[in-house]
Amino acid sequence: MTFDTLKKKLYGAQRARNVLAVLLAVAIFGNVLQSWKISQESTQVVLIPSRVSDGMVARGAADIRYLEAVTLDAVYAMYTISPNTVSYGRNVIERVAAAQDRAHLLDLYDDIAEDIRLRRISTVFRPEKFEHNLERLQVAVTGTLATYLDTTEVSTGPRKILLTYVEEGSSIRLSRVELVEIEK
Image (tube, rainbow, N blue to C red):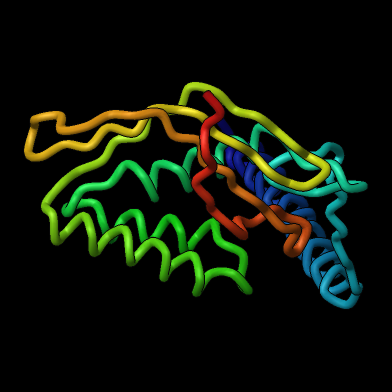
């Protein structure tokens, strides 16, 4: 290679480098301008649910799957209990209860928990059937309640538990828990 050829290749490489540097500077400047423009705009995202789910209430209709899930949470918390699970059950009732009824439901739970602690027993509720009344936001759960002393079953019997809900903030929350007489 001659000196003139090397010189031409050097100038060509320098020109390519300079063109690349200018293109890079233009791209960075364009990104900065776009970032500035986006930061000056006011944007608002509005989330619109496309279907009733996760406990939402739309036009007075409740999601039955959510209602059953909350019902099972509440029933298990109240009636499947041992001295070791008392605090967990209380947390569940706190989570699913309506704000205006939370104190009453927690008092009811504390009474049951105190009885469990004093007698050193465990109870297990086994749900068998759900009955829904969506107009009144009520679910009745029929099942068997078994009482244990250590690992020995002491008693077992049928129980029907009626749970009443209220709409709170586009969601359904537990309002009342009642034992119902079972018709023979």
